[in-house]
Length: 392
Image 1: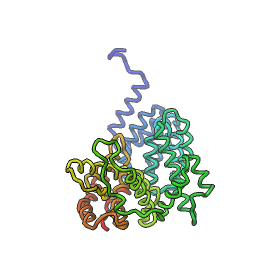
Image 2: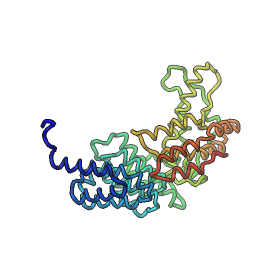
Image 3: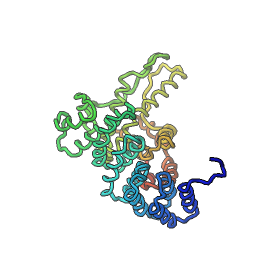
Image 4: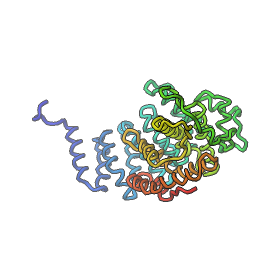
């Protein structure tokens, strides 16, 4: 076909609808969307592009429910078209239900998303983190019951992702058990049956983990347990295994502290706990590099307090186009004051170190408020940023 040949009729119809849509007001665009469904010129690309163009405007005009109705209408009248872009549309529906407090609508959307999870696992996991941020543990457990069998049999899901999903599922089971049982014990047979669905159980490790999460740690951590001399330069393992173990222990204890002292739900706290140990180890690795440069013979005390530069870098990793997870970023930011109080309570840091960290973090709330202002789909992170105070 050369440039003088006419376009196929269906392409001409598609282009005519889109040209009209681009010139229209918001309310006119709604009418055009419904007419495209009626005329059966709608396809997956058109549906996604139209809704994507209209989403933020629907929020600004307080028309989330009407926006949801457009997606529901598409799913009912053109199910094949809806299915083509279902992940994105279900994510919009979940976000709107959370923002409006329509929690009764969440299960149907979340389960539909889980049923398609193996075909777009990154978006599915980010949506689950959104639900975790909003403390929707029961729905997360329902999603995992659907999602895990799919990823277990999938030929396109990588093994480490499959393991991560199994670990998430196990954690949600443990969180639910700790929240609902008056006297939780690790050798509960019902608990272990549930856990065995998702990941192998280490009985001793489970006892220790549950004690930490229940804010009744078996091991008291001290400042000396985070003091070490690195192995000689050039060795692969320069940080002692004991330090790595203690960092893991500290991270788990923080999750219990968040739940029972700070009042943060397990599901939201886990968004922080899941990255905290790695963050601290990266800070320690940087300290080892500085130690080499200074040729010091003094041992290193692991840096356990956040610095603004490192926190901004960490948060930024969850705000990229290819790794968009704003709710994990929000949970990390919101937990910083609690983390400072936690390590202070354990006596792992000095008062001078705390003052330095607090001064360094001063003003981070303004930065985050500016960031969340440009993220209108969920108002909760912005509200939390306006209430944030880094105090001990």
